[in-house]
Length: 196
Image 1 (cartoon, rainbow, N blue to C red):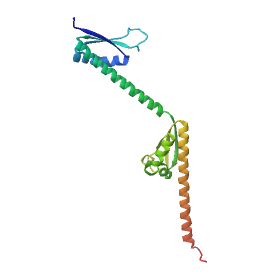
Image 2 (image 1 turned 135 degrees about the vertical axis):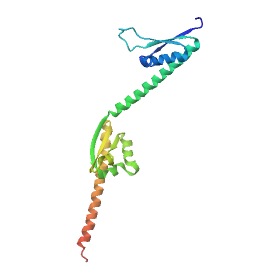
Image 3 (image 1 turned 90 degrees about the vertical axis):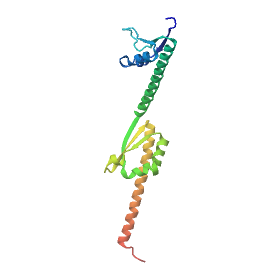
Image 4 (image 1 turned 30 degrees about the vertical axis):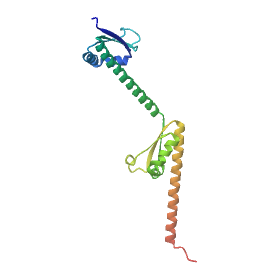
C-alpha cells in the first residue's frame, strides 16, 4: 500500500522477550491496539551470540506505526527501570554480605548501649558507620544475655565493638558501685555504728 510506513528498532534480548510476551500475548496486544504488524527478528538458529540485540520491524499506516513504536518504547523504559531496580537490589545485597560479627552482652547493659530514646546506639552507628542490631527482649526471653550483631567493613565493626564494650564496662562499674554502696549502707544499719 502506498500509505504504509515501516520502521525498525534495535532492542535488547530482554526487551524483545517483553515485546513478545508470554506465549506471544504482548505482541498480539500491540498489534490489536495499534493496527500495525510487529515482527521481532530473532538471530539465526546456531548463531553463537544469542545475547545480541534483536530488531523489531513495525509496518502499517503512519499512525499505526507510531502507536506501536510508542508501546515498544514504553516497554523499553519499563525494562530499564526494572534493570536499575535489580542493580540497586544487587548492590544492597552485596553490601549486606559485608563482614559480620556476633557477640553477647549482659541484658543489664542493653539500656546503656541503646541510650535514652535510642540516642546512644544511633550515635555509635553514625560515628562508626556500622549497622548494629541488638536482640529484642521478646526474642531473648529469660536469658541473662542478648545477642549483638554488627555488620560493616572490618574497621567499622572493630570501632563499634570497642564503643559497645566501653559502654558495657561503664554500665557494669556503675552497677557494682551502686551495689557496694547499698551493701555498705546495709552493713552500717545492721552493725550499728558505735557512738563516740
